[in-house]
Amino acid sequence: ASLATRLAVGLEHISGVQTLTPEARAATVCFRLPTWPTDQLLEELRRRVFAIISATPNGNGVRASVAWFNTEEEIDRFVSALSEIAAYSPETLPRRKMLEVLD
Image (tube, rainbow, N blue to C red):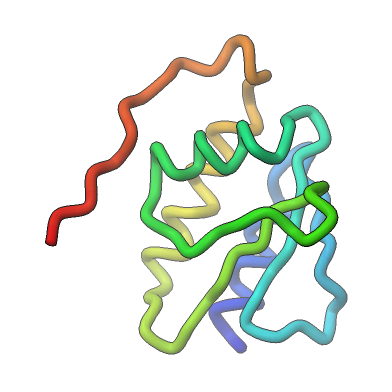
């Protein structure tokens, strides 16, 4: 619960990000960045951080799952990546290669 709260509070400090999850949250925090299509936002987040994320059922937001094994540093890294993306439009963001996950 404290990590989900840390994530939600971090998102609230990013200009343009709208938190969709109510105050009484579980281990999933939902948000959107209205200037970005959800599919493009998911793709760019996946280029910057390893996270369990997906589109909300209606496709208008992102769900980020937080679990007991996550660390504060991982949450902060996610918030930092979203903050970087939020500073750009989909057309102006410098592109990165997709992160590779090794077995």
